[in-house]
Length: 182
Image 1: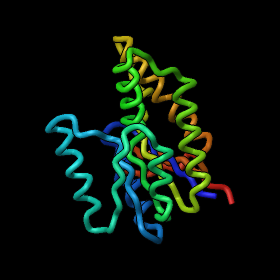
Image 2: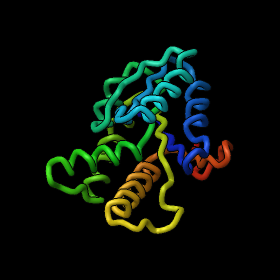
Image 3: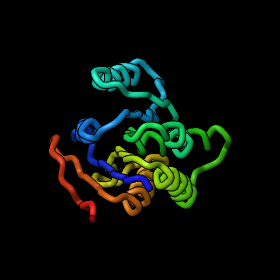
């Protein structure tokens, strides 16, 4: 049964670096599940910087914008899997549903999260999720942004409840808010 860790924090809090350092502290080959599609030049540059940060280590990159459970299963021969990030994944699910004229409900997000956690539990190694804590600011002005905030919050709560450990990144510092129990 795999070990699951969630690293959360605000924008530019250092959460990806905290998660990557944690992953690199663990033995064995590592896989990086990238949920972010390269939709514009700015995003391509962010992706390039993330790839460069992993270049010194031998990481397998699995690009998967929608099916996290399948991506985790594809990395089953890697004892360390880093998923970055859940909030972009929620955005992707919302976008995909919108293309079909539908909306994603909180219960559907929870179901997708539970599928990903199920894949983690079938994995023998450590899965590290990165997510943004988007609900700590002001209430967004428009309906779509409020919906995204709510769905990201539901995903974060569902994953955090199932994880063995939860870490909050603040100012580049890691604060354990749900310690792993022995």
